[in-house]
Amino acid sequence: MSEFGALSRAELARRTALAPSTISTLTADLLRDGLIVERSETPVPAAGPRGGRPATLLALHRSAGLVVGIDFGKTHVRVAVADRAHELIAERSKQVDPDQRSATHIKVAVRLVHAALESARANRDQVVGVGMGLPGPINRATGQIGDSAILPGWVGVNASKAMSDALGLPVSVDNDANLGALAEWVWGAARGCNELAYIKAATGIGAGLITNGRPFGGYGGTAGEIGHTIIDPSGPICRCGNRGCLEMLAGTPALLAALQPTHPDITNAADVIARARDGDSGCARALTDSGRAIGTALATLCNITNPERIIVGGELGAAGDLVLDPMRDALHRGAIRSAGQDVTLCQSTLGERAEVLGAVALALTRLGHALER
Ligand SMILES: [Zn+2]
Image (cartoon, rainbow, N blue to C red; front, side, top):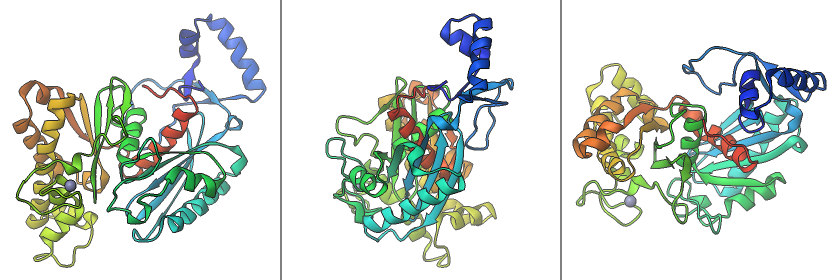
Protein backbone atom coordinates (compact mmCIF):
# COMPACT_ATOMS: atom_id res chain seq x y z
CA MET A 1 0.00 0.00 0.00
CA SER A 2 3.01 2.32 0.33
CA GLU A 3 3.21 2.11 -3.44
CA PHE A 4 -0.41 2.29 -4.42
CA GLY A 5 -2.05 4.59 -1.87
CA ALA A 6 -4.83 2.43 -0.45
CA LEU A 7 -5.73 -1.19 -1.11
CA SER A 8 -8.44 -3.59 -0.03
CA ARG A 9 -7.58 -6.70 1.98
CA ALA A 10 -8.39 -8.86 -1.07
CA GLU A 11 -6.06 -6.78 -3.23
CA LEU A 12 -3.31 -7.03 -0.59
CA ALA A 13 -3.72 -10.82 -0.56
CA ARG A 14 -3.49 -10.91 -4.35
CA ARG A 15 -0.41 -8.68 -4.52
CA THR A 16 1.45 -10.41 -1.68
CA ALA A 17 0.32 -13.98 -2.51
CA LEU A 18 -0.47 -14.43 1.20
CA ALA A 19 -3.58 -16.28 2.37
CA PRO A 20 -6.58 -14.03 3.16
CA SER A 21 -6.55 -15.29 6.75
CA THR A 22 -2.88 -14.25 7.11
CA ILE A 23 -3.68 -10.80 5.68
CA SER A 24 -6.54 -10.44 8.20
CA THR A 25 -4.24 -11.25 11.12
CA LEU A 26 -1.42 -8.98 9.92
CA THR A 27 -3.67 -6.02 9.14
CA ALA A 28 -5.44 -6.37 12.50
CA ASP A 29 -2.06 -6.03 14.22
CA LEU A 30 -1.09 -3.00 12.10
CA LEU A 31 -4.47 -1.34 12.70
CA ARG A 32 -4.17 -1.92 16.45
CA ASP A 33 -0.69 -0.35 16.44
CA GLY A 34 -1.95 2.66 14.45
CA LEU A 35 0.45 2.10 11.55
CA ILE A 36 -2.37 1.79 9.03
CA VAL A 37 -5.91 3.16 8.88
CA GLU A 38 -9.18 1.97 7.34
CA ARG A 39 -10.92 3.91 4.62
CA SER A 40 -14.31 3.43 2.98
CA GLU A 41 -13.05 4.46 -0.45
CA THR A 42 -9.88 5.45 -2.32
CA PRO A 43 -8.77 9.06 -1.96
CA VAL A 44 -10.23 11.24 -4.68
CA PRO A 45 -8.41 14.51 -5.29
CA ALA A 46 -11.08 15.89 -7.61
CA ALA A 47 -14.66 15.43 -8.69
CA GLY A 48 -15.37 12.85 -11.38
CA PRO A 49 -16.79 9.40 -11.89
CA ARG A 50 -14.63 6.57 -10.58
CA GLY A 51 -16.66 3.40 -11.04
CA GLY A 52 -16.06 0.13 -9.22
CA ARG A 53 -17.56 -1.16 -5.99
CA PRO A 54 -16.80 0.64 -2.74
CA ALA A 55 -14.64 -1.48 -0.44
CA THR A 56 -12.96 -1.04 2.91
CA LEU A 57 -9.43 -0.02 2.09
CA LEU A 58 -6.27 0.05 4.13
CA ALA A 59 -3.77 2.88 3.88
CA LEU A 60 -0.58 4.08 5.56
CA HIS A 61 -1.12 6.32 8.57
CA ARG A 62 -0.14 9.97 8.25
CA SER A 63 2.84 9.31 10.53
CA ALA A 64 4.52 7.68 7.50
CA GLY A 65 5.18 11.22 6.27
CA LEU A 66 3.66 13.98 4.15
CA VAL A 67 4.45 15.26 0.67
CA VAL A 68 4.03 18.79 -0.66
CA GLY A 69 3.21 19.89 -4.21
CA ILE A 70 3.87 23.45 -5.43
CA ASP A 71 2.67 24.79 -8.79
CA PHE A 72 3.61 28.13 -10.34
CA GLY A 73 1.46 29.49 -13.16
CA LYS A 74 1.59 32.89 -14.81
CA THR A 75 -0.49 34.56 -12.10
CA HIS A 76 -0.80 32.02 -9.30
CA VAL A 77 1.06 29.87 -6.82
CA ARG A 78 -0.80 26.78 -5.66
CA VAL A 79 0.25 24.42 -2.87
CA ALA A 80 -1.11 21.01 -1.84
CA VAL A 81 -0.21 18.71 1.06
CA ALA A 82 -0.94 14.99 0.88
CA ASP A 83 -0.12 11.94 2.94
CA ARG A 84 1.66 8.85 1.61
CA ALA A 85 -1.69 7.14 1.27
CA HIS A 86 -2.24 9.64 -1.58
CA GLU A 87 -4.92 11.56 0.32
CA LEU A 88 -4.98 15.31 -0.11
CA ILE A 89 -5.18 17.00 3.28
CA ALA A 90 -4.69 20.73 2.62
CA GLU A 91 -4.50 23.18 -0.27
CA ARG A 92 -3.67 26.88 -0.57
CA SER A 93 -3.30 29.28 -3.47
CA LYS A 94 -2.47 32.94 -4.05
CA GLN A 95 -2.33 35.33 -6.99
CA VAL A 96 1.13 36.62 -7.95
CA ASP A 97 2.54 39.19 -10.34
CA PRO A 98 4.27 37.27 -13.17
CA ASP A 99 6.94 39.95 -13.59
CA GLN A 100 8.30 39.67 -10.04
CA ARG A 101 11.64 38.00 -9.30
CA SER A 102 11.73 34.29 -8.59
CA ALA A 103 12.83 35.04 -4.99
CA THR A 104 9.55 36.88 -4.41
CA HIS A 105 7.51 34.00 -5.83
CA ILE A 106 9.45 31.55 -3.67
CA LYS A 107 8.68 33.58 -0.51
CA VAL A 108 4.96 33.43 -1.35
CA ALA A 109 5.17 29.67 -1.90
CA VAL A 110 7.00 29.08 1.39
CA ARG A 111 4.31 31.02 3.29
CA LEU A 112 1.60 28.96 1.57
CA VAL A 113 3.36 25.69 2.43
CA HIS A 114 3.55 26.68 6.09
CA ALA A 115 -0.10 27.80 6.10
CA ALA A 116 -1.22 24.53 4.46
CA LEU A 117 0.79 22.44 6.95
CA GLU A 118 -0.65 24.47 9.83
CA SER A 119 -4.20 23.91 8.63
CA ALA A 120 -3.41 20.18 8.45
CA ARG A 121 -2.08 20.40 12.03
CA ALA A 122 1.27 19.19 10.71
CA ASN A 123 4.77 20.63 10.67
CA ARG A 124 7.71 20.75 8.28
CA ASP A 125 9.50 17.90 10.01
CA GLN A 126 6.79 15.51 8.79
CA VAL A 127 7.41 16.41 5.13
CA VAL A 128 9.40 13.73 3.34
CA GLY A 129 9.26 15.09 -0.21
CA VAL A 130 8.38 18.18 -2.24
CA GLY A 131 7.47 18.36 -5.95
CA MET A 132 7.29 21.62 -7.88
CA GLY A 133 6.00 22.62 -11.32
CA LEU A 134 7.02 25.60 -13.47
CA PRO A 135 5.72 26.79 -16.86
CA GLY A 136 8.82 26.27 -18.98
CA PRO A 137 11.29 23.58 -20.01
CA ILE A 138 13.46 22.36 -17.12
CA ASN A 139 16.98 21.31 -18.06
CA ARG A 140 17.53 17.92 -16.50
CA ALA A 141 21.29 18.31 -16.22
CA THR A 142 21.36 21.79 -14.65
CA GLY A 143 17.91 21.96 -13.01
CA GLN A 144 17.50 25.42 -14.60
CA ILE A 145 14.34 26.66 -16.23
CA GLY A 146 15.01 27.50 -19.87
CA ASP A 147 13.47 30.25 -21.94
CA SER A 148 10.15 31.25 -20.35
CA ALA A 149 8.19 34.28 -21.39
CA ILE A 150 5.58 33.22 -18.86
CA LEU A 151 7.72 33.75 -15.76
CA PRO A 152 10.71 35.81 -16.96
CA GLY A 153 12.04 36.22 -13.40
CA TRP A 154 12.81 32.48 -13.29
CA VAL A 155 14.97 32.18 -16.42
CA GLY A 156 18.39 30.78 -15.57
CA VAL A 157 17.41 30.10 -11.94
CA ASN A 158 18.21 26.68 -10.49
CA ALA A 159 14.61 26.24 -9.37
CA SER A 160 15.11 23.05 -7.39
CA LYS A 161 18.01 24.47 -5.35
CA ALA A 162 16.37 27.85 -4.79
CA MET A 163 13.16 26.32 -3.42
CA SER A 164 15.05 23.65 -1.52
CA ASP A 165 17.17 26.32 0.22
CA ALA A 166 14.06 28.34 1.09
CA LEU A 167 12.12 25.37 2.49
CA GLY A 168 15.01 23.42 3.99
CA LEU A 169 13.70 20.33 2.19
CA PRO A 170 14.70 18.47 -0.98
CA VAL A 171 12.61 19.62 -3.96
CA SER A 172 12.04 17.86 -7.31
CA VAL A 173 11.09 20.09 -10.23
CA ASP A 174 9.40 19.43 -13.56
CA ASN A 175 7.60 21.29 -16.30
CA ASP A 176 3.94 22.00 -15.45
CA ALA A 177 2.49 20.14 -18.45
CA ASN A 178 4.51 17.04 -17.52
CA LEU A 179 3.01 17.25 -14.03
CA GLY A 180 -0.51 17.67 -15.44
CA ALA A 181 0.06 14.45 -17.40
CA LEU A 182 1.21 12.68 -14.25
CA ALA A 183 -1.83 13.81 -12.24
CA GLU A 184 -4.35 12.90 -14.94
CA TRP A 185 -2.67 9.51 -15.28
CA VAL A 186 -2.76 8.76 -11.55
CA TRP A 187 -6.02 10.41 -10.48
CA GLY A 188 -7.78 11.93 -13.46
CA ALA A 189 -9.08 11.38 -16.98
CA ALA A 190 -6.20 9.10 -18.07
CA ARG A 191 -6.36 6.49 -15.32
CA GLY A 192 -5.57 3.06 -16.65
CA CYS A 193 -4.08 4.45 -19.86
CA ASN A 194 -0.36 4.05 -20.54
CA GLU A 195 -0.06 6.01 -23.81
CA LEU A 196 -1.25 9.54 -23.29
CA ALA A 197 -0.62 13.22 -23.79
CA TYR A 198 -1.79 16.04 -21.54
CA ILE A 199 -2.11 19.46 -23.13
CA LYS A 200 -1.90 22.52 -20.92
CA ALA A 201 -3.58 25.22 -22.99
CA ALA A 202 -3.19 28.59 -21.30
CA THR A 203 -0.83 31.55 -21.82
CA GLY A 204 1.64 28.99 -23.11
CA ILE A 205 0.73 25.67 -24.69
CA GLY A 206 2.68 22.63 -23.57
CA ALA A 207 2.31 18.87 -23.76
CA GLY A 208 3.20 16.30 -21.11
CA LEU A 209 3.75 12.82 -22.53
CA ILE A 210 3.50 9.38 -20.98
CA THR A 211 4.55 6.53 -23.22
CA ASN A 212 4.72 2.86 -22.40
CA GLY A 213 3.56 3.69 -18.87
CA ARG A 214 6.43 6.09 -18.17
CA PRO A 215 6.72 9.88 -18.28
CA PHE A 216 8.66 10.87 -21.41
CA GLY A 217 10.86 13.98 -21.16
CA GLY A 218 13.24 13.40 -24.05
CA TYR A 219 17.02 13.60 -23.80
CA GLY A 220 17.30 16.89 -21.93
CA GLY A 221 13.77 17.33 -20.55
CA THR A 222 12.37 19.53 -23.33
CA ALA A 223 10.00 17.00 -24.98
CA GLY A 224 6.44 18.18 -25.46
CA GLU A 225 7.09 21.83 -26.41
CA ILE A 226 4.12 21.63 -28.77
CA GLY A 227 3.49 25.38 -28.36
CA HIS A 228 6.35 26.02 -30.78
CA THR A 229 4.97 23.86 -33.56
CA ILE A 230 4.82 26.10 -36.63
CA ILE A 231 1.19 26.39 -37.75
CA ASP A 232 1.46 29.45 -40.02
CA PRO A 233 4.93 30.12 -41.51
CA SER A 234 3.92 33.70 -42.31
CA GLY A 235 2.28 34.30 -38.93
CA PRO A 236 3.45 36.59 -36.13
CA ILE A 237 7.03 36.29 -34.85
CA CYS A 238 7.29 34.18 -31.68
CA ARG A 239 9.63 34.65 -28.72
CA CYS A 240 11.47 31.52 -29.94
CA GLY A 241 12.41 33.29 -33.17
CA ASN A 242 10.07 31.41 -35.48
CA ARG A 243 6.87 32.64 -37.08
CA GLY A 244 3.34 31.44 -36.52
CA CYS A 245 4.00 29.07 -33.59
CA LEU A 246 0.91 27.43 -32.09
CA GLU A 247 1.30 29.49 -28.92
CA MET A 248 1.22 32.74 -30.92
CA LEU A 249 -2.03 31.71 -32.60
CA ALA A 250 -3.89 29.78 -29.91
CA GLY A 251 -2.62 30.83 -26.46
CA THR A 252 -4.74 33.05 -24.20
CA PRO A 253 -2.91 36.31 -25.20
CA ALA A 254 -3.72 35.58 -28.87
CA LEU A 255 -7.42 35.12 -28.06
CA LEU A 256 -7.56 38.30 -26.03
CA ALA A 257 -5.70 40.23 -28.77
CA ALA A 258 -8.10 38.94 -31.41
CA LEU A 259 -11.09 40.05 -29.31
CA GLN A 260 -9.61 43.41 -28.26
CA PRO A 261 -11.19 45.54 -31.04
CA THR A 262 -14.72 44.24 -30.44
CA HIS A 263 -14.54 43.18 -26.77
CA PRO A 264 -12.14 45.64 -25.08
CA ASP A 265 -13.62 44.85 -21.65
CA ILE A 266 -12.53 41.17 -21.75
CA THR A 267 -9.22 40.61 -19.98
CA ASN A 268 -9.00 36.88 -19.23
CA ALA A 269 -9.82 33.42 -20.57
CA ALA A 270 -12.59 32.77 -18.04
CA ASP A 271 -14.49 35.82 -19.36
CA VAL A 272 -14.08 34.62 -22.98
CA ILE A 273 -15.51 31.22 -22.02
CA ALA A 274 -18.38 32.67 -19.97
CA ARG A 275 -19.38 35.04 -22.80
CA ALA A 276 -19.15 32.26 -25.40
CA ARG A 277 -21.46 30.12 -23.25
CA ASP A 278 -23.87 33.08 -23.08
CA GLY A 279 -24.05 33.05 -26.88
CA ASP A 280 -21.43 35.67 -27.80
CA SER A 281 -20.42 34.59 -31.29
CA GLY A 282 -17.12 36.52 -31.30
CA CYS A 283 -15.91 34.79 -28.13
CA ALA A 284 -17.09 31.41 -29.46
CA ARG A 285 -15.20 32.09 -32.68
CA ALA A 286 -11.97 32.89 -30.80
CA LEU A 287 -12.22 29.60 -28.91
CA THR A 288 -12.98 27.70 -32.13
CA ASP A 289 -9.93 29.17 -33.85
CA SER A 290 -7.75 28.26 -30.86
CA GLY A 291 -9.14 24.71 -30.78
CA ARG A 292 -8.54 24.23 -34.51
CA ALA A 293 -4.94 25.42 -34.30
CA ILE A 294 -4.21 23.15 -31.32
CA GLY A 295 -5.93 20.23 -33.10
CA THR A 296 -3.70 20.74 -36.14
CA ALA A 297 -0.60 20.41 -33.95
CA LEU A 298 -2.15 17.42 -32.15
CA ALA A 299 -2.60 15.63 -35.49
CA THR A 300 1.17 15.60 -35.90
CA LEU A 301 1.62 14.58 -32.26
CA CYS A 302 -0.74 11.63 -32.89
CA ASN A 303 1.13 10.62 -36.05
CA ILE A 304 4.41 10.53 -34.11
CA THR A 305 3.44 9.15 -30.70
CA ASN A 306 0.07 7.39 -31.38
CA PRO A 307 -1.52 8.13 -27.97
CA GLU A 308 -4.63 6.37 -26.70
CA ARG A 309 -5.89 9.48 -24.93
CA ILE A 310 -5.25 13.21 -25.05
CA ILE A 311 -6.36 15.19 -22.01
CA VAL A 312 -6.87 18.92 -22.48
CA GLY A 313 -6.35 21.13 -19.43
CA GLY A 314 -5.24 24.68 -18.66
CA GLU A 315 -7.53 27.71 -18.58
CA LEU A 316 -8.57 27.19 -22.23
CA GLY A 317 -9.27 23.49 -21.60
CA ALA A 318 -11.91 24.72 -19.16
CA ALA A 319 -13.99 25.75 -22.22
CA GLY A 320 -14.79 22.04 -22.76
CA ASP A 321 -16.45 21.27 -26.08
CA LEU A 322 -16.20 24.91 -27.18
CA VAL A 323 -12.51 24.17 -27.84
CA LEU A 324 -12.54 20.36 -27.88
CA ASP A 325 -14.99 19.99 -30.80
CA PRO A 326 -12.94 22.11 -33.26
CA MET A 327 -9.80 20.47 -31.86
CA ARG A 328 -11.21 17.01 -32.67
CA ASP A 329 -12.18 18.11 -36.18
CA ALA A 330 -8.70 19.44 -36.93
CA LEU A 331 -7.02 16.42 -35.35
CA HIS A 332 -9.03 13.97 -37.45
CA ARG A 333 -8.51 16.03 -40.60
CA GLY A 334 -4.75 16.19 -40.07
CA ALA A 335 -3.81 12.82 -38.56
CA ILE A 336 -3.44 9.61 -40.53
CA ARG A 337 -6.58 7.54 -40.16
CA SER A 338 -5.23 4.89 -37.77
CA ALA A 339 -3.66 7.45 -35.39
CA GLY A 340 -6.88 9.49 -35.41
CA GLN A 341 -9.04 6.43 -34.78
CA ASP A 342 -6.96 5.31 -31.82
CA VAL A 343 -7.13 8.51 -29.84
CA THR A 344 -9.85 9.85 -27.54
CA LEU A 345 -9.70 13.57 -26.79
CA CYS A 346 -11.18 14.61 -23.47
CA GLN A 347 -11.25 17.45 -21.01
CA SER A 348 -9.14 17.39 -17.84
CA THR A 349 -11.12 16.17 -14.85
CA LEU A 350 -8.70 17.79 -12.39
CA GLY A 351 -9.05 21.28 -13.92
CA GLU A 352 -6.91 24.05 -12.50
CA ARG A 353 -5.54 21.69 -9.82
CA ALA A 354 -4.00 19.22 -12.29
CA GLU A 355 -0.50 20.70 -12.09
CA VAL A 356 -0.29 20.98 -8.30
CA LEU A 357 -1.61 17.43 -7.91
CA GLY A 358 1.04 16.36 -10.43
CA ALA A 359 3.64 18.02 -8.20
CA VAL A 360 2.33 15.86 -5.33
CA ALA A 361 2.58 12.79 -7.60
CA LEU A 362 6.16 13.78 -8.56
CA ALA A 363 7.13 13.91 -4.88
CA LEU A 364 5.53 10.48 -4.33
CA THR A 365 7.37 8.95 -7.30
CA ARG A 366 10.69 10.32 -5.98
CA LEU A 367 9.95 8.46 -2.72
CA GLY A 368 9.70 5.25 -4.71
CA HIS A 369 5.91 5.08 -4.96
CA ALA A 370 4.82 3.25 -8.10
CA LEU A 371 1.91 5.30 -9.37
CA GLU A 372 0.91 3.37 -12.49
CA ARG A 373 -2.78 2.61 -12.47
ZN1 LIG B 1 7.73 29.72 -30.90
